[in-house]
Image 1: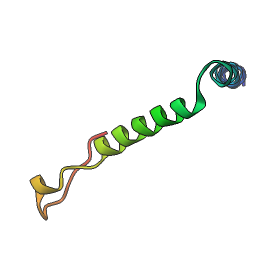
Image 2 (image 1 turned 45 degrees about the vertical axis):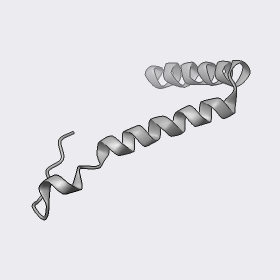
Image 3 (image 1 turned 180 degrees about the horizontal axis):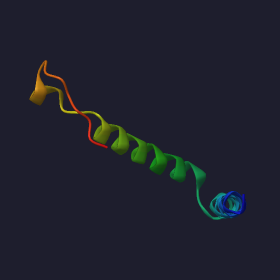
Length: 58
């Protein structure tokens, strides 16, 4: 319970700081780029394995 409260409080403080001191449209663009990078890393190359079963390593 204490860990949740500390994490929630820290997240709230960081959110308030970002909302006051950063350009939100720029922040949204950065988050979009990060999401694209993560999605690209999740997708396996389709040309290497062909019709064989692909195994995911997490």
